[in-house]
Length: 204
Image 1: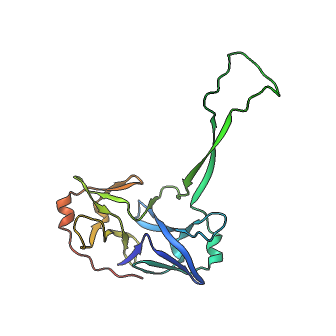
Image 2: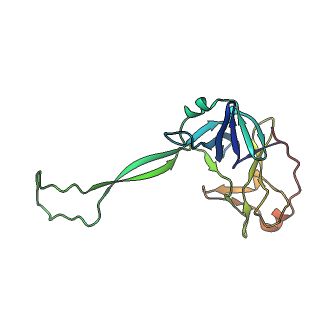
Image 3: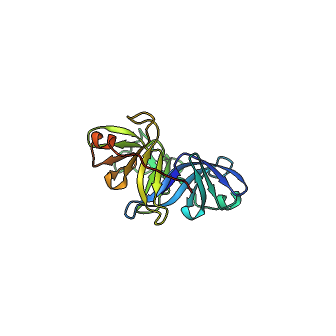
C-alpha cells in the first residue's frame, strides 16, 4: 500500500513548485485521478490540475512530479473565475415607460465567482476535511492510502486532529457512506472507528 499526502510540498524535476491543496478522486472506482497544486509563482493563475500519471514519488510531506515547472504551467487551472450578471439593487422602472440614450440607466452589474474545475463525476478531497461517523465527528482527513497494484483508494488516514491522540487511524473506504464536498460521512459509529487496527503503509 502507498500513501498520497493531501497538503504537501510539491517538487518538479527542476525545483520547488508549490503545494498540494486537493486530491481528485473517482467515487465509482475509488481511484485518484488528479492532484491540485497551488504555485504562487505562476502569474496568471496559481492553481493547476495535475494528472496522477505525473507522480514520481511521495513522502509524508512531499510529492515529486515527473514534469518541469514549465510543463506544470501549461496544465489546466483548477480555480476558475467566472462572471455572472446581476441587477443592481434599488433600481425600479415604471411599467410601460420607455427611455432611449442618453437617458438609459445601466443597471447591470457583474459579480466574480470562483469555481473549482473538478472533472465531471469526480470529487475533490482536501486536507482537513471533516470525517463524521454515524454519531459524531471523529477527526479530519490527512492522507489517502492506495493499493500499489490497482491504484484504488483502500483507506482514509487520520494522523492528527482526531479523537485518539497520536494514534494513526485508517478507515476502510467501504466504511464511507458519502461525501458532500465539505465532509466525509461514514456508515460506522465512533466505537467502531476507535477499534480499527493499525495499518502498515509505505510511500512510493
